[in-house]
Image (cartoon, rainbow, N blue to C red; front, side, top):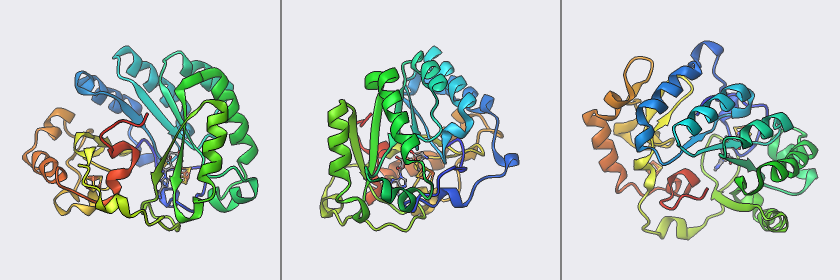
Length: 264
Ligand SMILES: C[S@@+](CC[C@H](N)C(=O)[O-])C[C@H]1O[C@@H](n2cnc3c(N)ncnc32)[C@H](O)[C@@H]1O
Ligand code: SF4
Ligand code: SF4
């Protein structure tokens, strides 16, 4: 997560309410150093936020490094800041772009996103489809609020031949309501988040974004400004937390980044 800053004000999400000051965001070179240390053991790297495209040049630079090291990358974006120039440069690296889209109805846009970006995002999606082809994906959040919208988003994606996925609503500090999908609670799928390494905008390292739910994981494992990532991952507490995650069975295991079969 390279930033908590965002240009949208989504009602599903509270990340935008606590943007980091400039002084807390680490420089891109620190993320790149981490990538260089770990690349042989990474099957992919995801850049998210906040809105990552607020730092478009950094994203492109990271995409280039990631390609050089042969690590597939995914950027998750609200789609409002995409430009043709960005898409042309990004397409050279053959990485994936995921645009978030929860409704096809312009009238809901202000309520869902807190900003009137509908026309911009929809035209950016069409442009991204032309330039990135199959490397453009669309993701929706399945909640009580979007029950009737998701099938329409799916139809839109099917018509354009864009892969569509949904992830269930979780508490990210937003005000939506979960869709009470009981199979999410009964299902015994093991959470795959134990394989993840999450690095925050300030360099703190955790194993999963929902680490606050695991008492032993509440404190970050370390910070890449102070310690090498390999030392952080080699700590006894990291191993203990990873073991706990093997049996952790909370609804957040259904987020795209935590399911065993990669969605993107
Ligand atoms: C937190 S956003 C950050 C990236 C970018 N700002 C965006 O919206 O795509 C990452 C993904 O989480 C989804 N998301 C936001 N709030 C959520 C929530 N409460 N539960 C589940 N997913 C959520 C977004 O729709 C997006 O696909
Ligand atoms: S979901 Fe993404 S676009 Fe919406 S407020 Fe959160 S970080 Fe911003
Ligand atoms: S179920 Fe949630 S808290 Fe537990 S390991 Fe998976 S993502 Fe983390």
